[in-house]
Image (cartoon, rainbow, N blue to C red):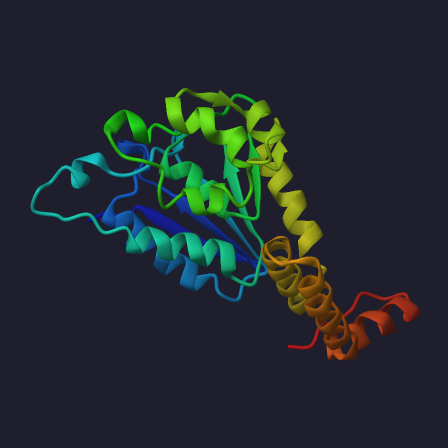
Length: 248
């Protein structure tokens, strides 16, 4: 079968492309398997960009597969993809110039950053086929308060990029999606990989902690990082007015 997902790693940036436009990049078993494999290829990248071919970033579940009585539903591959995007050590960036529906919104929400074209539209259409946005609610509700996404989840009605950015579902709306993504990658690349991984983790966990626990864990993290080789190199480079050369 033809490949549905492609991957390239250039200058430390892993670019993963959903390339199944014939079914609007639906989340078929093959696409999810290949997407997981591509994420493994990018394990040591400085940043991962998730982009698409065709006019749709992702239309959600492959309903042809899901309606096959001989193929019982199994959401584990999707969960693995979302966890890899959310928990991996490097920043993940969704680059979108097209429509986003259902599970595609979950893929986008699992990314740390998202750059979308102004004409992009979104819809959580699950209730219209008799299901709920269950698995993808995990990354979505870590970015958006329930009250701001409830109407979209209850009705399945489309909403636009401006609203998606207002509620925190999208981080960037840009006419030049590719150029904005390149600029973000160029800004990420000079940072310490270890410090960026720590930053990604604290962005994820600090909002879930009570204040006392958060201060205790972040104090320990700060002390650990300041004692580390990356901090020594970074401060030496600052004093000597040169680019740092990160250990490893």
